[in-house]
Image (cartoon, rainbow, N blue to C red):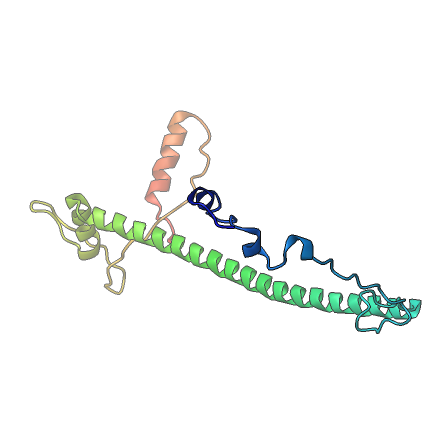
Length: 188
């Protein structure tokens, strides 16, 4: 049977064509597959049997015990790894807190130093420091130094005396204050 150009066009494309191109057998010649009947379970070799034979109860309990033991070992290993990691984490957290506190203290110290530096830019502060530390005076002023019995200058000696409670009339209070002023106070 010869194909015409029209039939050739209809049978082109994927999956098209004559039945002989898809299979070598002719429609009447097709055969059915032979079905293999399974052998009884007794005759089937153990390697070909898809279901394993049930284990006795003692073996199942032993297998469960081993599985549980392995699971506990794995969990213990994971616990050890996590415990080490947590210890490292907390140690680093403490170090970080200490470093942050140190940084805060250094920033405070830097702020104090910057404040001192700004004070040195003030001419009045420089004058007061020159008066106290170096004993300088401004032109037209007279400078005095208080010295002790050995001839050493006294610096920053504070004299304090508890003021007694004055009693009586106003003129008695005034005379008592004059007497207290006349007596020297003790150094601390």
